[in-house]
Amino acid sequence: MGEEGKQQISAVVNTYNAEQFLDEVLQSLGGFDEIVVCDMESTDRTCEIARNHGCRIVTFPKEGHTIVEPARDFAIHQARCEWVFVVDADELVPPQLHDYLYRRIASPDCPAGLFVPRRNKFMAQYDEGPVGDYQLRFFKREGTTWPAIIHATPVIQGPVEKIPNNLEGVVLMHLPAETLHDRIEKLNRYTDNEVEKKAGKNYGAGALLYRPMWRFLRSYLLQGGFRLGVRGFIRAVLDGAYQFFTVAKLIEHRMKKN
Image 1 (cartoon, helix red, strand yellow):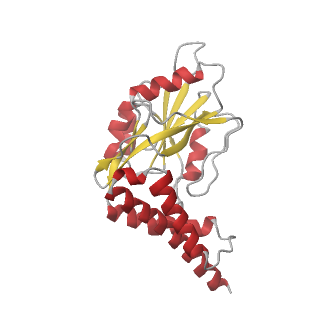
Image 2: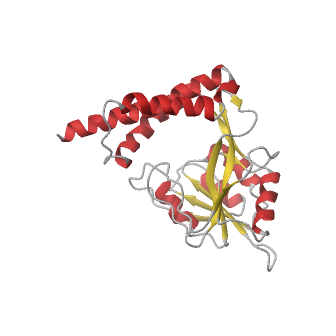
Image 3: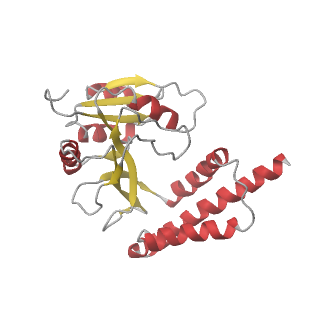
């Protein structure tokens, strides 16, 4: 743990068979007061790697869980520090981001939570320029809950702000170079989970047009996908497809019930 009187941060990592990048990830977290690895009964070297880094390991039974969110809530409440930074097992924390977080919590105007920018790889290249992907991963432990719903964000008691997205190194680095095969496989799996999350929505045929179109325009124009050339266009189309298949599966789910 850190110096007496200094505000402290627990880095929390959820894992399941996460050996591929975990050693590099945990090395990047070495400057935090505590590293908690919440493992969902991995069968690879995940726990061995975590032990080698001196992490505190807690276990969340995998059972029938197909999403990480239930384990997120459990994990953040295992942390011992006032502040919690949730890092995925395929994300690096540069020193500049580490230092920024400690400076913010030492400031009297620090909010209860911070959205952290994340730089992603797509089609073998990192995105350039200002980061458009924000993740609500840094917050006060007390009073925070993480809903057990896919892609949910934590519910935080108090104000939340975004870290500026143009600060050198103040960004999560997402390691995997996501291929089109990966993206399309996830699209099918994640939209299945969206059906459970949004089963009460009564989308009609019009939503098959306007929701994908809005998501495409948001990704390509508002989030700067046009700056990435053909990569940005392809990603925006896939973002629109995600909405199309979510709505289509919800309509199918409703038809099955009738």
